[in-house]
Length: 380
Image (cartoon, rainbow, N blue to C red; front, side, top):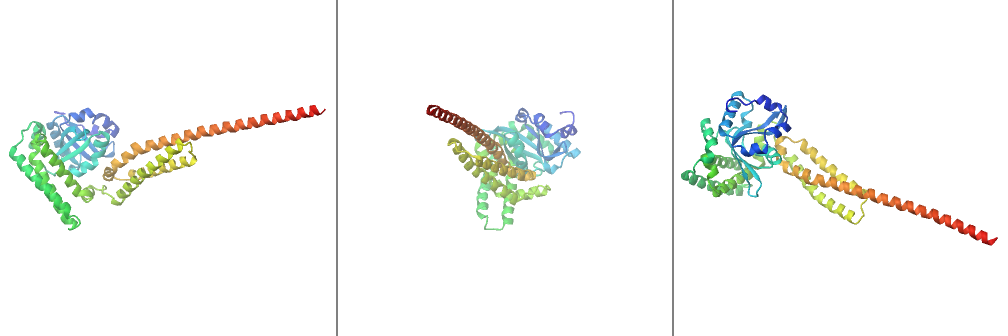
C-alpha cells in the first residue's frame, strides 16, 4: 500500500458480502488509525449506502485520498478522509469515532448512511466529528494531524478558548431551542448553521490533541454535538439528502412507518399474552393460528415499505426495523409452532377418544346381543 496505488478495480468488483468478510474484519477496524469513507459507492455494480476502508496509519489514508482525487474514483461530496478512534461508549458497548479531516461528506449524511455498516454490521456506536468541506488547507497538515494526533500535547491556551467557545455555543443552543415556534423557520435554520460553523471551527482548532483533551471537555463536546443534531432535525437532513439526488426524505412515509411499527409492537405484546394464556389453559383454537398469521402479514407489509425506501430513509428507521426483525419475527414464528403443535396433539387425543368410544359401543352392543341370546335360551 505504501508504494503501490490502491486497486479500486478489484475492490469495487467484489460483492458486499465479500467486502464484509475481507475488508472490514473487526480486527482490521479496531487497529485502524485513519481511513476513507464513501457513501453511495457501487460494489459489484450495486449502490452501497456506506463503505469504509480502514488504514493502520494516517499517511496511508492521506495517500489514498490523493489517489481518489486524482483519479476521480468517487464524488468528493460523498467521500471523506477520517481519523479513527475505537473505544468504549458510556454504556460499555464498542464505539468508533470518525473525525472528518478532508472531503465533502458531511456529518449528518455519514451518521445516517453509516448506521447500518457501523451500528448493525460492526456492532459499534458511531460518532462523527468535524464535517466542514475543507477542514485544513494543506494536505500535509492533514497527514500530520492524522499521524500524530494521539501523541500530541494539549495546548492549554487552545483548550481554554475551546472550553469558552463550547460553553457559549451550548448557551445559544438553549436560546435557539426556546425560540422555535416563535420566529421564522428560516431564522432558526440560519442560527443553527452559524452555531454548527462555530462548532466545526472549535473542533478544527483542537483536532491535533482532541484525544488527550480530558473527559470534562469531551463530555461538553458530545453534549453540544447532540444539541446541534437535535436542532437541525429533519429539515437539515432533507436539505442534505436532496442535494445528493434521489435520497430526499419522505416525511409522510417515515411517519407512517414509525406509527405502524409502534402499533405492531403494541399489538404483538397483546397477542403474545393471549396466546400464552390460551396454551396454558389448553384453550387454543384455529383462531389463534389466524391471529398469528395476521400479525405476520402486518410485519411483512411493514418490511415491504422499508424495502421501497431510499438509503437516507432507511437510515432513519433502521433501529426500529432491526428490532422488529430480531425480536418480534422470531417470537411470532415460535408462537405459530407452539399453537400448531398443541392443536396437533389435541386433535390426536380427540381422535383416540372417539376411537375408544366407538370400540366401547361395539363391545356394549355385543354384550347386549349375548344377554338377549341368553334370555332366549333360558325361556326354552
